[in-house]
Structure formats: C-alpha cells, structure tokens
Image (cartoon, rainbow, N blue to C red; front, side):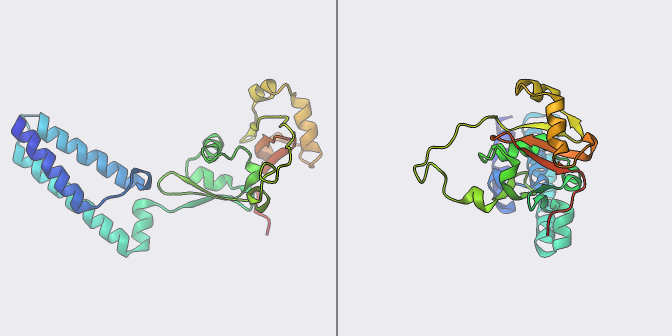
Length: 226
C-alpha cells in the first residue's frame, strides 16, 4: 500500500508538471474537471489494492496525454479553444443587463449581483461593462463617474445612504420580501416604474433600488444604447 501510494504521488507530481500550471483562479471548467479526474484516478490507484497498479498508471498517463493534446489544440486553434473552454460573455453592455447572455451562461441575476459585490460594487448603476470570464470570474469596467475621485478623497462629507441596494424585480417577478425589508410597497414600486413609462412588471428583467432611492431598471431583451 505504501509503495503504491508513493508511486502514485510521484507520478501525479511529474505528470502535473508536464501538463503545466495555472493558478486556481485561472482554471477554466475543462481544466478544473481534468484536475479532479486526475486526482481521482491517482487516489484509486493508491488506495484500491484490487485495482491493478499497472492499469492505474496507464490510465494516469493516457489521461495526462489527452489533456496535453487538447490543451495544444486549444492553443493552436481559436475555434477549438471556444469548443473546449467556451468564450467570455458580455453580460452588461453600456449599463444594460443582457438577459439572453446571462441565460446562455446559466447565470442568475442574483449570482451576477453577488459577483459584483465581491468587487465592492453594490449598485448595477455603477457598471458600464461586465464580462463573465471562462473561469467563472467577472471583469468589470465602471462608469466614468464611478471611477472618479470619491467624496472622501476630496474631503467632502457624503450623505448617508437612504437604502441598501437590493433587487426589487428579478425576471419579471417582484421580490416581495425585499420590499417588506425596505418598508416599501408594491404600489410605490409600480408608481416608480410608471414614471419611466413602464406599466407591465413582466417586461422588467431586473430592477434594483439604489442608495438614493432611485431605481436601476433593465428591460427584457433591451438593446444597449449606441
């Protein structure tokens, strides 16, 4: 058992060096699955004595070889790279949420909001462009006003925010809990929408209340402003 574990350890170490290295944050879905499978095979070889050792080593080598071949093809061909790793998706274009791109990426607006919060962005209104990368991370370009000096930078006292930015509408449905938490009503929300000539809730893909009480609104299938 010790001998099998030792051979498996050094085999996976050597093969991993041959395959190449990437930071975990840079791994695409393909590389992530490959790494998990690679480790599972090595664990099987080192712990399951009923598995022939030679067969396990051959499986590791074949899997590593296939991974190298696929990586090489992806490196040489952009079409193959898209096939194996997919391609980045622009999910916010000129401040507009592209719900079709979110659907293709199987990304819910709540998850998009979470990815923005991880970058200390709490309002969709701050975002000019957002790209959902193949490694699952979000790249964001803020609007010019959001990138200029803050009031703290120029020693101007900022007013306290009236509200914590929360979603009020998601995919055409009102989030009643958030309205209740904010001590707001559905009637208030409908009046806000009516001021922007929006009279049907199901036409709204996403709506978020901003710190000053105004709304960020993204209409379903909206085209980015030119």
